[in-house]
Length: 252
Image 1 (cartoon, helix red, strand yellow):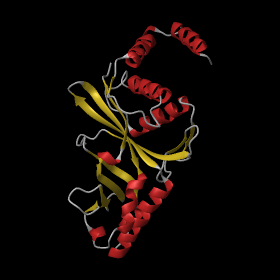
Image 2 (cartoon, one colour):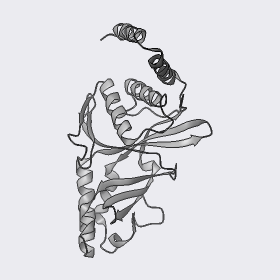
Image 3 (cartoon, one colour):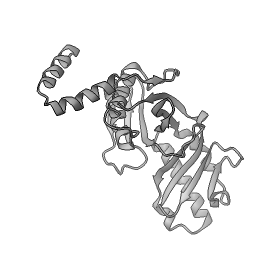
Image 4 (tube, helix red, strand yellow):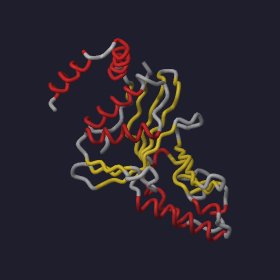
C-alpha cells in the first residue's frame, strides 16, 4: 500500500470512530508526534532511518497509553516489527521457551543474527554497567554437588550460549528522570565477551559472585542462583557493549 493509500485509509477509519474511541486515538496520535529527546550517537547497523522511525513511533505510541517503560514482551514486539519495517528478514523463535535466543534478524547484505531480547526498568540499574537478572535457566544447578561439575556446567552453558546466540539486545528504561518520564538506553552485548569463561578454574567457580577476569573491576560477573535455578550476569562493562540509542520520552 502506498503512503497516499495509507493516509486515505486512516482518514476513512477515523471518520468511523465513536467519541470515546476518537479520544483514545487522539491521545495515541499526540504521543506518536510528541517531541523526543535523542542523544547524538554514531549510526550503527541497527539504527538506519527506517528502523529508527518505526521503533521510535512504537516507543512514543506506547507512552500515549502508559507511563510504564516497555516490558520485555512489548520490546520484543516493537523490535521485530521495526526490523520488518526496515525490510529485513525476521524469524521469531518458534516457542516462548526457546533456549538462549528470541529472534533471528537478517539484514540485507549481511548474515543472520540470532538475538536474545531483554528489557529492564529495575530501580537499582546503574548507568555505568549492565545487569541481566536472568541470562538463562539452568536446571542442573539444583543437582550439582561436586566442585568440578559446577565448573564444567558453567563453562558448557556459556560456551553453548555463545555458539547459539550472536548478541543480547537490551532495552533499559530509567524512570522519572528530571527531564523526562522514561530515559531509554538500547544496548547490544556481544556474546563474544563470554569467551574467557572457558578458562574458569574449579575453585573460582565456587564463589557466590564469579568475576571474569578475577580482578577488582572485572569485565562482568556471574552469579549462579540455586533457589531460582538461573544464571545472572552483572557488572558488564558498558564499554564492551554497543550503544544503539538513548532517548528521553514523556508520557502524554
